[in-house]
Image (cartoon, rainbow, N blue to C red; front, side, top):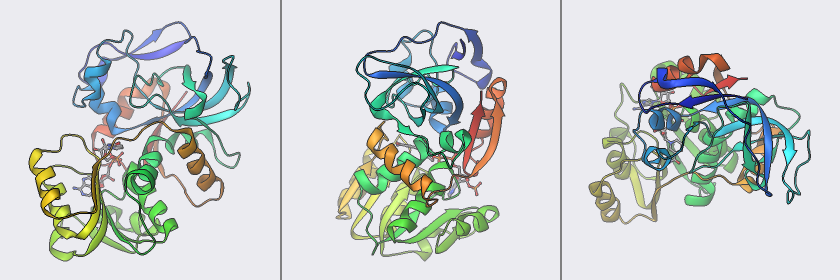
Length: 315
Ligand SMILES: NC(=O)c1ccc[n+]([C@@H]2O[C@H](COP(=O)([O-])OP(=O)(O)OC[C@H]3O[C@@H](n4cnc5c(N)ncnc54)[C@H](OP(=O)(O)O)[C@@H]3O)[C@@H](O)[C@H]2O)c1
C-alpha cells in the first residue's frame, strides 16, 4: 500500500511517499480502507520535533504520522463485535501514540471508532475527529461546562475552536470567541454570542467573571486567561509547554480546576460526536481539501497557524 513516511524530523519535504506492507490487525482491531485524513497542528509539531510526542515516536521505522481517519472497514479482527466489513467508520486513532493514518490502510482498535453518519461525507467525518474530540473532552471530561456558564473560547475560528463554540452553545453556555477581525463573522455564524478581535482588543482588559476558558494559544495568553476567570472558574489549556509559573498562577487564583489536557482516543466520545453530526448540531467547516500527493501543501497550511476550521487530505 502507499503510505507517507516521515524519514527524519524536520520540514514538510521530509514526508516521503513509500510502498509498504498493509498493517496486520490484532484481534480487537479493524483495518480501515482510508478515504480521508484530517490534519492537525500536532502532525506538524511531531514532524518538526516540537511536540513531546515526537520523542516517543522516534523509535518507529517507518514512522507514519496522522491520527484522523474516515474510511471503510476492509477486515475485522477475531474479537471485533461492533463493526463488519463494509461499515463506514471514522475516529481519532491511537492517540496518544503511533497513529499511522497517512496511508491507504490503517489499523485501529474498534473501541476508538464510531460509525460515520450517512448524512455526512467522509471529508466532513475526517474533519470531525481530533479537533472535535478535543472540544468535547475539554467540556465534558476534563472540565464540566454548564448551561449557566460564560465561556471564553480562544482561537474560535480554528480546528478545535470552531467545534468548541458549537458544542458550548449546544450545552447552553454564553460563548465569547476570539480570532482576528477577518474571522469575526465566521465565529458569530457558529453561534458565538460575542467576538473579540485579539489583534485590536486585549481580551484581558475587557473581560472578567468568566466561568470557563478554553485556552488554545499558550505563552502569556494562559496567565492573561487566568486573570479573567471568576474565583472557582475552570481553565483547560491545550498547547503543550506550560510553565511552572503558569501552574502557580492557577493555584493562586483558587480555581475550581485547571487542566493541561491531552485528548485521547475514545469510541464512546466519538459516538457522541457522531450523534451531534447526524443531528446537524455540529457542522465541521473545511477550508482546504488537498490530494494525497499534496501532503506538503497540507502541512504548510496547518503550519501557518491561520487555518479556518479544518484541513483534510483525500486519498
Ligand atoms: N492538548 C490537546 O489535547 C490538544 C488537542 C488539540 C489541539 N491542541 C493544540 O491547541 C492549539 C489549537 O489547535 P487548533 O487545531 O484549533 O489550531 P488551528 O486550527 O491551527 O488554529 C488556527 C486558528 O487560530 C486563530 N488564532 C491564531 N492566533 C490567535 C490568537 N492569538 N488569538 C486568537 N485566535 C488566534 C486563527 O485565527 P486568525 O487567523 O483569525 O488569527 C486560526 O483560525 C494548537 O496549539 C494545538 O496543538 C492541543
